[in-house]
Length: 619
Image 1 (cartoon, rainbow, N blue to C red):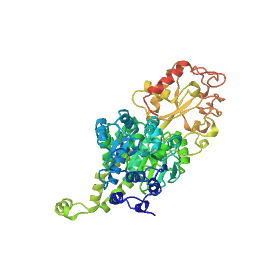
Image 2: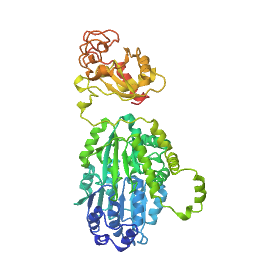
Image 3: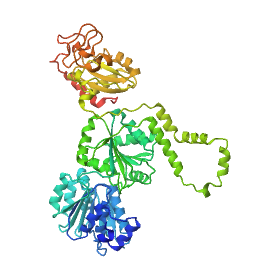
Image 4: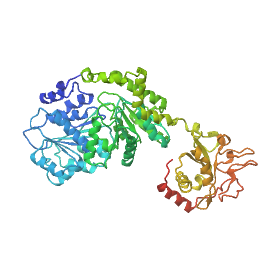
């Protein structure tokens, strides 16, 4: 393996990076640095976050600066202010022994007047976000004539954030003789267009495979019901007592809500998103860097540029829409040769996204099982024992206090002391998990085996969630009935909060779950109500009778849920036959079900649309 000196790094820079602990170059640095130190070389480097990209482009850029010429000679573009500041800080560290070299970070959210004054005094390297640099260019305070090197760091993310027009405007002002260095974790189509338009026969350097995740990262998916996602998050955090990670959410609102819940539940957590001021963001990030915050809940954009090498976990509370974003997220852990874990907490409808991510990153997700209360408690206790065993005791600090402490505890046996320490340390854990219900992990089985969507007997019935009762309601998809309609009915007709579980929509009827102690109240309250002229009937379903015959032919006698097929089914004799109720609510049709030609009324469909926005309960 070559050393930095063998790669051609100059003595002043070499001295600085050795003091920073750099010993041997990482793969991307070994590939990129020698090429960038040459003349007229354009480079596309595809490497994951945390592989040493900043040093890979930063060291050659610094080495080629003429400090006697005080004008911008290098321009580094990056997507966020956090990354802008991080790069500028790293360049200042690398150039510690290069006298009079000036690096200026230029980004939104700080005083533009201060940045203008710094530009007028003279700088050698500008590290900028595209938006703020365009503002400065429009004010005619940036001179691009001397720029000889342009670096686009995390170019894919800049394109995703909509900076294409700004990048085109910036590059149009830079001399055509400049070197261009493009660094990206993924290679979307937008990158290919930039390389074709602005780069001259670029050399492509790939560390790993294109779009592939870090080899040091293990990928795990936990498939749970949507209502259990936060409870699953808590159990994952509790099962990993030394967790130090980022929880990614899709929206700013969700980010703040999850962070608030975690803080309320006693976790060292905080939120990072675009609605925070720059001062607030800097404060949160500083707390996270020094590990005063154990869990940082963040949006994708806000977490860009957060350079922390020791993250143990990245948790995807919601999967991103594109695979590239997942690659960036998972790349926050497993950095600098360390191992890491990327966790996805998903529900059934996100299973397809997992398959797509697996295909692109060329790795399989391990199916995770939510740890039980006993497993979590044991893990927490053993973690405390491990900390006690490894604690470094400074005898000089505690020597004077030890006699008084020993006298105070003299009446207690060793076992009693241990029990009291455990109780003080884990009161929250003990209390919470003593009352907590276990969380069901949804098995990723073929669709035909679950029976949860099937209406006919051969697909099988659905198992009711423990602690819940399964309810039958005499409306379904052919009536325009949707989950939000059910939620709205419950909100209107039943006082207090009713927890709704699984909802199965069939063609002419539906099933839903409520907690056992609420079942009778729900049935009594909703039966006889009307939904725009449609009389509603709600009954407690007999799982044993309904079982696998939902939608098949009915037998004789008793309450027969089996006769409710999508066509109404052929009913048996006697008993109570919900399958043959007509759309008018009381009369039975000759075909034994809702009339095939019946269509949802305009009023009903309008009710359905409006309730999508107004439902109070969540299922």
